[in-house]
Amino acid sequence: MAVLILDALNLIIYLPFLKPDEEDISKNIEALKKHNWYIALLEDGELKELIVHDKDVRQIIGRFNYEKLSRQSYQIKCERKLEDVLKKKMVA
Image (cartoon, rainbow, N blue to C red; front, side):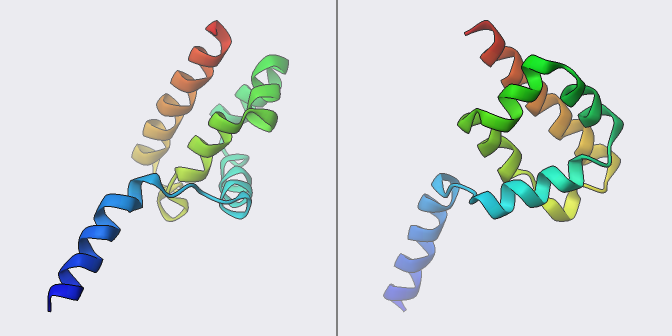
């Protein structure tokens, strides 16, 4: 019983620190390419460069929940999150 509790605690503690792999990132990018707001981001040369090459931006994209990307409300959340990180990268 104690082992189960410790396993659950470890999972809760370390889960937020797990990084998405390239497969997750690619899958999410393919899903995002269907949306006009993402296509508009890719049309900007500087933003496209960040989306394609910046590790932090790609990690954010990889963390999006693929199953929810078809929902309008979740898309809005993802759009805001991605735009925020891109703005920070542009300023830096």
